[in-house]
Image 1 (cartoon, rainbow, N blue to C red):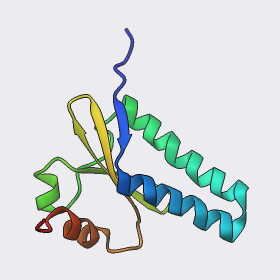
Image 2: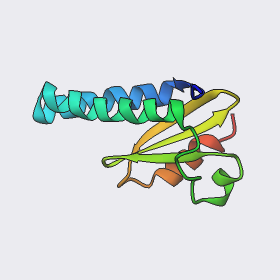
Image 3: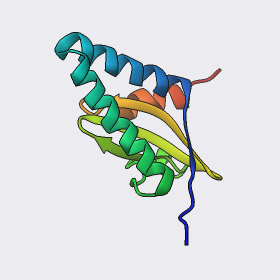
Length: 111
């Protein structure tokens, strides 16, 4: 029996962060280094297309209650949420940052 494939969609902030990561690695260590980290991130996203609930819920109660999950790829934390048959990737944060506060300030800001 074939396993279900889920769509993975990088939202604009995550797409920009992925591009920033590639630029950073390229400038610091060259294009091969940039390719390696982006390949690892894309491999992890491909894994989410098959197993979208494989990442644990975020630890913070307000995120957990809203269904946000995360995976760790090297030093990066990928925050995502499964909605229907689509995995929405919200952010790719450096795990050394205060990413819960950064995500909270964006998620709960008044428009």
